[in-house]
Amino acid sequence: MLLNRILIALIAVVASGLLAFALVKGARLLTGTEPSRTGAIVATSEAGLGGPFTLTDSNGKPVTNADFRGRFMLIYFGYAFCPDICPTELQAMGRALDALGPKAARVTPVFISVDPARDTPASLKPFVRAFHPRMVGLTGTPEQTAAVTKAFRVYYRLGQPSRPGAKDYLVDHTSFFYLVGPDGDFRAVLRGGVDAPAIVKALEQLVR
Image (cartoon, rainbow, N blue to C red; front, side, top):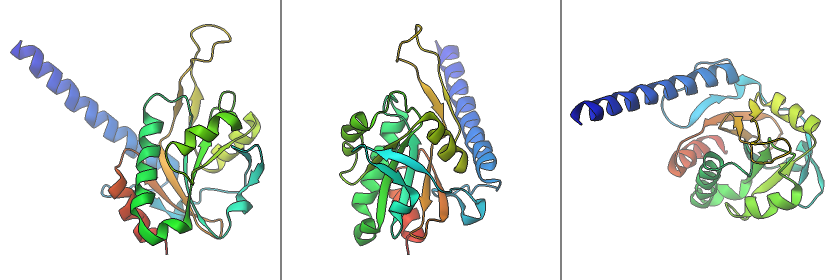
């Protein structure tokens, strides 16, 4: 029994180390820079991410990046059928905005789906509102999704369904928050897996 406990502990330590390495490696690939090892900010404007996009909001209305001019966008890429990571990250984002104070009014939380086949405008509306009343849910065609994820260097890959035609597949994807400024220019990448206070601290530095 003692040996089993030791082995389990060692496996947990190794897994934690591999996860940390993967996050650092992913941040390097994403931004081309060495990530900060403290706080939520992975990289700032030098990373050169972002760009124009055309998608559809949860009301079925076509939306472009220009529609958000004058406000900060805090963007998270994911999918509504995600069993755990996406809800956890979106909950942290919503709580951070609630705790941010007056600056929160200048930040629009945005969820962009990487699973347009299942994430229709109608299905996104209740999903995003569960995390924040001002959160905007965006989806699009596969081509539009590919374009916006390429602009932000977001990796995603659809998994295999349990049987042909089934919609029970998972989606692998990067887990970061992206801050875009009121001028439409990219400002920063915030690491995923952080709590609301860490996001608040980062936004207090970046939203000016």
